[in-house]
Image (cartoon, rainbow, N blue to C red; front, side, top):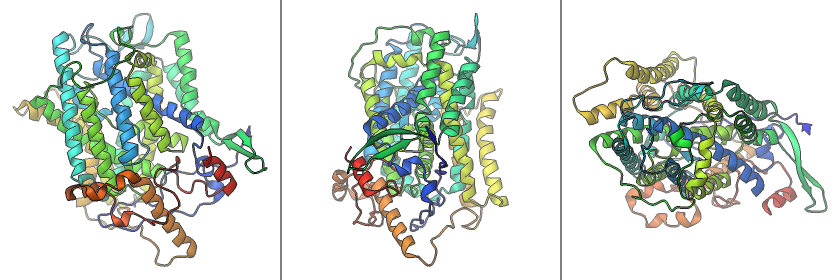
Length: 611
């Protein structure tokens, strides 16, 4: 094993800009070849084996987030409170997340974004079922967290009320999906996103990283020793040993021996620590899960998810109000995910057509999830974007594998039930590290604007503080918000409890109503007046790269001329098509990082492609 002197490059783009008027893309920063990360030099996950390992790690993060969301929603479930096994509920969520992920990476935003439930769906669901987040309690003989049973308003009201509540939540998920899809089809994200500069994105990312700290602490408190061990191992593997290179294999493509060294510790910075701590947790027996959620059930080995298998979603005025709040909050969160993922992969900001398509297909995924009976919709997952930053590589191939694996697992509730044994410290540790990366990405976005400006200092501080204060204020108020009309109360309680939505809304309003120069707002980075030959070539490469990565696949792109005029906002504009003389077709390359493969020889490049 050799210690490489190379240092991983910061993955955040140096030229992030969002302006109302279309601007030519920024020139990529000139890079020293010795400063590129492994993913830039070896074309990312070039083999199927490595792609499967990365997909497995993304799946572990997705499974942790999915199971944690179900635990928080069903923690008050009384014994026999569901007329079907909870494993089938988890399997339906896996299936809808997998299908939504495949659609998103194939013809949505085209970014390698994993789709999963988020707090934007969980908070309105808890409000709709008259629940609060679980309180910490000690179990006899084991100083660990146990999610309490029958301690809340509606938790012990019996089978009928619980099933009715979950049907209402599924109805709210369907409403949110329909509204999200409509917003995307109308092209609203594409019109709004250019007005979201660094001072809108940065507070949203900071709040997204901070919003789940209480839930993460709850899971970690099940066993602080194991949680700290997992966090320590993930930090050491991804950061301290991140540049340690290990020879992978050697072959002779043209009578010349070629050795490839990969940073194994960084690429396995989730799988290895989770496997280690999961084994230790099973050995000492610290997995504390409510019995009615983890005990063996009569879940089938195989089933085909289909709408209406249990009961159809229940559409009520309260469900309609909760669904509208879900749609608004999830849309805000997803737009932040698009911008963050593009920055981490050193791509230009997502164009309007990619944002609109992405939100439309996220809405379709939520509609499917609600019809299948899932109480949680699908949205772009911040923890999985944080995992991309840990690996320093992103790939559509990996995202497709995650989606297919989730769909396959959703066909077998008995196999999906295996993931209900994930120890609580593992849930807390994985989500803690990935949320911390999102938080740090938010802070790193501040440098794109003039952070010393009094205007910007006020916008950032006010947006973050108020986004964290209002939900706590609403939760601790001695008298609940009451307007006299239950649906309006439900809408306000749900929306005012969404920190990411509040941060994005406040940042957007203040950024676009308080006067400031373009340079002060971080929107003034224009191209230089004169170009060298190298800069012109890099500009052309940047345009081709954006057209390839955000453009539709060729079979779908050929249909753009046939769709109605109001839906043309989903198709690339002529100015987005880039240089038609590009060397590769859209989606052919697995790695999304720019300049991948430019720093090694043609023979090596052909050897990698031949695999």
